[in-house]
Length: 573
Image (cartoon, rainbow, N blue to C red; front, side):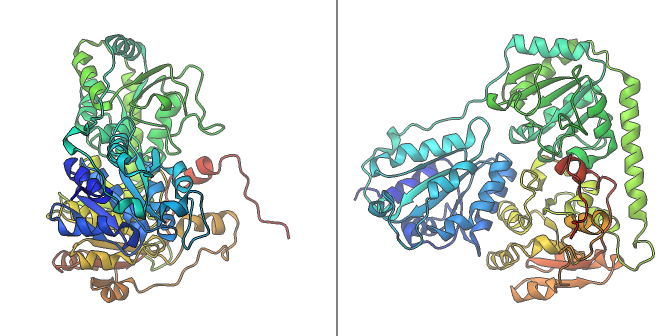
């Protein structure tokens, strides 16, 4: 019997080593689900909500060298998956997104069918490429093209829309004759390397900046070598945390503005930025007037695998379209011959500024309780969690205010050792991220640090963790507020009724209802013992720790960068 389009899809996935498939039951993709569930090669996971499918595929790509598949049913299921796919799109994470559709005779032209939706247009703005398989004979070509585009150049999610009748139709093919497309890794030319070398030699205050492209190229070790061997100040974006070791002499903090005053000072005073795999997002404090402008005498060397990104967010004096790893390897070969004339006093000053900042945040964490209250400090909680983490742990940070203190104290060993979604700052990504990380690395501890607001967004995925025996540990820093907005409502608008208050939810009890281990932790002194009980529980565990809102030294980042130029005044009623 000839293969169907559905079986061809699975065979091509298998040929590319793509094992993980996340989805909810969809009658229109019944053959794909049936085939994946019967073949032990695939790890087919049913989640509780389609958004989690996108987040889990995201986490597989971030922590491994593979990509994953996510799908939801036609209409509502496809739309529920949008937040997870958008988060991956914002962080340039490759994944294959599948949406089934109604029968092809009902899709084009669209009829008023149950669950009808224009899924191509819905996904077009949040995917790198999308297409509909309208003819069975084109399926192999389109599937191969989708996988190639997801991985090549600047990676990202790709989308295929499959009418349900097409998925069941026979597809005559010769699988061996279908070419396997390989993503190229472009390297810089000798002339481009000469230009970089000349610029570095002429600069007095050069700054090294690693972006997500360094992490995706698995070139973190090369960037750290560059920082060590050059002696230049080095920092990273959120997506590249772990690309430079905290004890590297030139490290001045990682993760953009939240890294502290040394990073802001460095970008304000540098005369040359060597940016590798970075798109200069909101987190990077340059070319964001009026607060973080770029001076006419500041030069940017922008190295990116996607030429369309060069000069898009900052003016580039030198733009090089190249793979981050290829570029770093060739630059390191030239480094011994470079005569760098960097201002060593300036570099020492940046490092001193960073050490001062570390002293400030540790001083805040030394105060276990907020002044005049019995509420636990988030800073003290984050630092204690850091000290509990096993050396080989994969760390997951959820979105929202919780990520301020966790990023301050917890530094991953490599970019693949931690998961966060800085492009969207997505609340609720934590639980599905952790589930996928544990699925990929069952023998490593996976610790998710979240807060009460974010936890409520995808709490149903605790049941997914329990069902698949994914023994993650989730620590909920619970202040019963939408913390990120509390500062605006209470401190700026002086309006405690701004709408940030939440109920004190019994997360440990809910966790037990999902079949997990749950424990309400009474205080910071009890956290180490509770953490050990969670490690030994033999099931997913949730530790619920009450904290109080703890202002962060870099909280002025939000009104400065996100809402720059806006004036917040109470409404005159």
